[in-house]
Image (cartoon, rainbow, N blue to C red; front, side, top):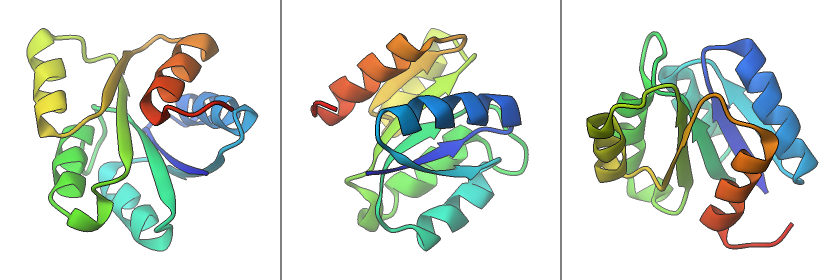
Length: 123
């Protein structure tokens, strides 16, 4: 299964990549929403997106709305993983089509639990 990690922090992308690869995912990375849209077009088999909120060029919320506006990408599960902890932001993300929301900082167990719940599969 393929996952797309979208975060402007290289160190966060590396941590998320490591956890996802240990769970059996093939991982593609992007450092902003615009780059992530290109990665999605290049990788039509992406099934999971781990998405930061605050990024330059195109932020996670704008990316989320763009992805959800495209019927081709309806089946992709999207989890916001961000420091954005305002209740309104969480609600906005869910209303815009995020399937799950995880606050930074997180650990492997928290990420894995959310992903398993999201995909309803055992690894």
